[in-house]
Amino acid sequence: MTPAAVTPTPALYEETVPGGGHTSFILKRGQTLRITDLEGAANVSLLLLNATQLSERLNLPDTLKGQHTARLSSGHCLYSDMGRVLAAITADTCGWHDSFGGVLNAEEVREKYGQGRYQELRNGFFRNGTDNLLVEMGKWNLDLQDLLMVINLFSKVTVDEQGGFAFVAGNSKPGDYLELYAAMDSLVILTALQHPMDPNPVYAPRPVQLAVRVEPDADLALSRALRPENGRALHNTERFYL
Image 1 (cartoon, rainbow, N blue to C red):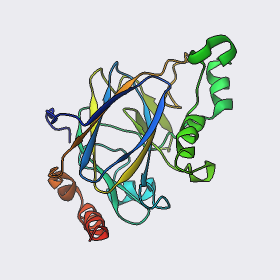
Image 2 (image 1 turned 180 degrees about the horizontal axis):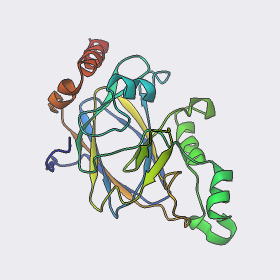
Image 3 (image 1 turned 60 degrees about the vertical axis):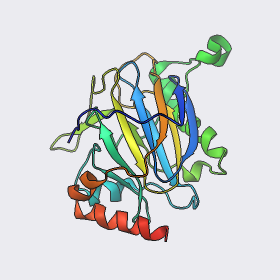
């Protein structure tokens, strides 16, 4: 399901999110967001919501169940809790993105990596996914009750026959990227921190690059062909904009 490399049109906007950083913005309908792992072994915890109706947000159980998958890659759609498509993965050189791991809070980060306080480390202090996402969510009048499900881009977690999870190191290489096409105006909230299951005991989150471009004629044929549910969800999305 991994396509050949895609040459993007010129970007409207580019930004590098440093390891430990966070950001949020509206990806408008018809725009594509390319997220690139600059150094390899990155992890990006991502939230998506309907930018014009924030009560509608990413629903991972429906996303996975509707597409008969436990991982995300090219062709997969990201469903909202209203049966619509927030975004579709139109390109992916990594091949596997995790939907199980969630994010760590401050106490869990201290337990895993140590204190890492601002008093000693200044801007290098140890950040956590919960607080990073909440900082961005607050800019859009969202709070802890709105922090539900995240996708961990560039990370691979497998599940054995007994239901046990296993983190697979080395899943993403330098230069790997994923492209998200916005099927509706989507609020993107993300942070670049290590995956909660990454066994590396050293706090060392990796940077990623973001590039937004206009692509109103994005090819969603792969998404439509992947599962009939995707066609229905895309139809629901198109009807939303009538």
